[in-house]
Length: 288
Image (cartoon, rainbow, N blue to C red; front, top):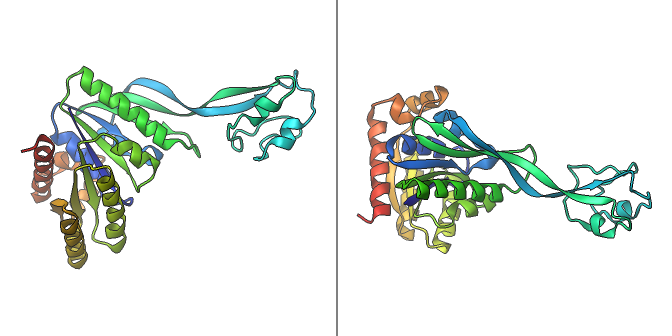
């Protein structure tokens, strides 16, 4: 079983479009959307939820007002000002540190599980899909990404699947770390802009640090060929292979508007380019 993650240094480069295409082209696989802060792969894959689970992320304080002595020790000690004068805990302000729980002289404070979102195992026409929905203003996206990645890996091992196809988050933050751990190939999607080059370079440094094989795809490369040349030069200096360059096309935009993975929307030249990208990625993870 091989794990391939599609990542990008910044948002809007076309990462999910490529992942959705891989979902169509790959055989014998499970898909997982680790971009839990702004999940959108489900829009292309149209999943039917089979299993639903709560995502627990830390604890929140709760005060039993009947047992409370109203001594205000908890109010005075809380650095986050999460407890009001009626001894009600603000769930947004509470950090779940537990200081009030340990300080309460009568044990009126209890720490309760914090449900920060949900995650799902779903069926699609392309195979099993594991995805999640993080609650509004909730954190611990790295923990949630690790959770669903683990679930997808378990499914792949149990069903003897060949691939785990991962739609990773943009950037280099905690959920990216959770996505990268233990994968066989990182496919970085970038664009021919200076910010695209800069942010791609940051992810390249991260994958180099963890010694993860890396490939690059330049999307909309023909919008600025000079910047595309700079990206290719940067990749060559790092020993990273550019496995595909996708030209700008209104067809790609139309496939997104129609909520359809591109290889199922069009049989044009760009489809052939994406097929070649997938074939090259397979060869890289299989050592051919």
